[in-house]
Length: 98
Image (cartoon, helix red, strand yellow):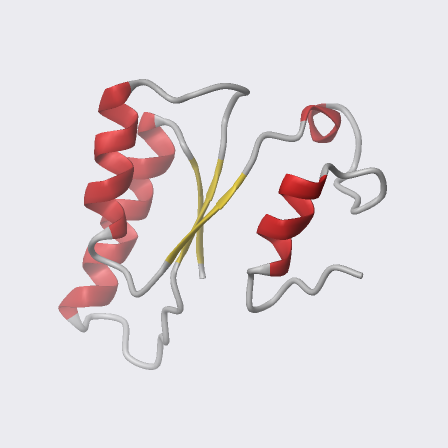
């Protein structure tokens, strides 16, 4: 799984990795998809949303993890997460949420 922040640098890095994977130059890599981690609260600018769609078109699946303010200054934890974040995490094939 590729994981990237939903900003220009993160998306361009994910695009390069997805291109390498699609070219067949990474034998033995089974890419299940791309996890985009929102880089701020609120809606992303249109250019970022367009780039997310472009990069997402080159991978098998895309998941989006909403912004979690508490994770900025503390270790990530499933405790006290909003229902939206819990639903998003539950969709991931490698991150079961109790």
